Image (tube, rainbow, N blue to C red; front, side):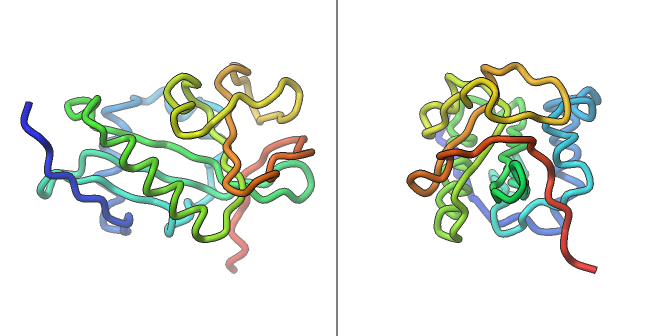
Length: 171
């Protein structure tokens, strides 16, 4: 296969319909029942951490991060969804989006990232399985798929409690 000419861009409002179609193709209607979706429900993603991947004018990937609170007051971000068009998977697009988004989050002062995903895949990006009993989510999650990554040393030290989406403070 030829190399892709991949362009990463900050997500814009105009990207929303194409991203929704991408989510539908990749995850189907069952995505609305997933616990991670429930955490994001009604919580706008952090636009400065959301990126799209394009090949030419075709949107082939998207990553979003949303604000969450753990316990009483630990701010963190929830990574996901990260979505790659099925026809473009296994071409490095997900890795490029992950790297851009995590680097941007660290540069903007975010300290902790949580996600529900495949531990062997995300391990290469520095994610680890959350120790049992540390975090509770608003629905069932396979404990081996609940992951975290510190963007600042010690950011997960002592963190425990329920995880909830952070509603916008805007009026």
